[in-house]
Image (cartoon, rainbow, N blue to C red; front, side, top):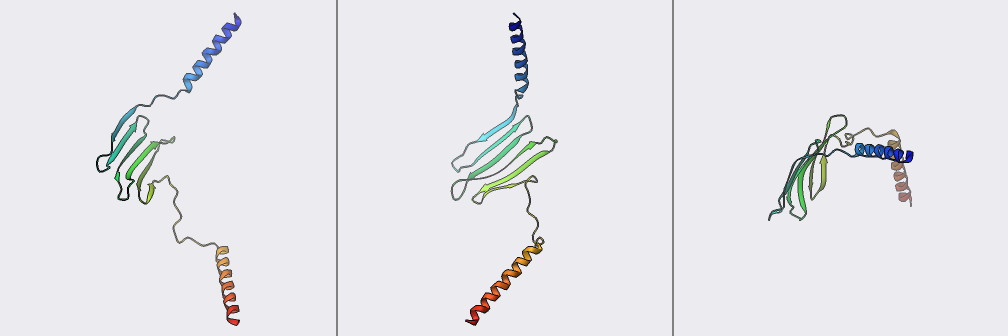
Length: 135
């Protein structure tokens, strides 16, 4: 009898834990799609209750394939919204966002060891040219 009571208590505890681990359902607020027409034009627009949004529109490209423009965004843990805009075409996928790393402005300072190596290579080139002239 004691074993049965213990098993029931364990089963109730496990059931409570599993209910807490199930993520809440997220409502879809908007989901619209336009399938390709005779010119290949298509679009999609999606928004969820948790703040996730995705939209794009596109058409068939001149070289085949699909050219698209669009964006997506989602809330971050700190309350800010992450946002990405993109173009996808013959030149590939081209995202733009404040979240993406940016290369340093050019011209940037060249380290001295690099300048020394360039000078050394130039001296070697001159030396080899002089040796060729002497032959």
